[in-house]
Length: 213
Image (tube, rainbow, N blue to C red; front, top):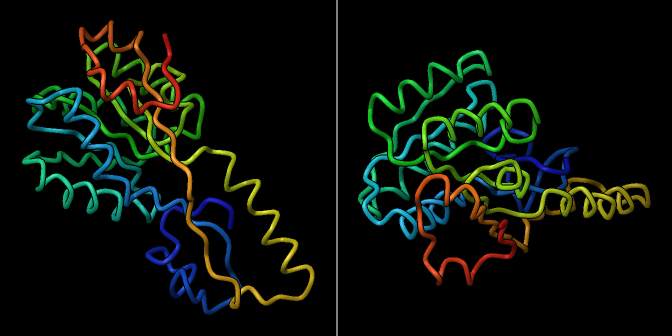
């Protein structure tokens, strides 16, 4: 596996240190970044009290994504509004629910970001509804999302070659611990911020690996 979000919770491996079967590789540990995403939103939106979370019900990892966000939100005194949908045909309804409940921002599970047409649709709806958004991959901010924070999308794909090499040379998958990303990048889209009428604090911009102007 090259980019599993929750390999333990999904039942692919027994643990990261000891996979215990015929599968190993890389975990993106993206759900555990829930606290960092909320921290970034709080820096940009100091008064945000309610954050919507768009999750993909067909992906077993969505439960951990939502739980991690809810747990992290307690420390920021933010309420999470989970919106678990089955597919893109439910995007419109999900955004209507966000606006109805007056969500101040939106976190998007990366399952939607990796499909270009879904990504464009979400960004379009967020822009139309003037809703600040954050997700995990640079492609999200490049497409018009306000921010992205997570490991570079291609890093685990490249690193997977190391696992392939070890296995082809005779090492059993059960003896190769699952790796987690070591590098993360923050991308901020200032064009989107301007459209939303937001001023990104200087200390937040200083942390960014890329700023889209």
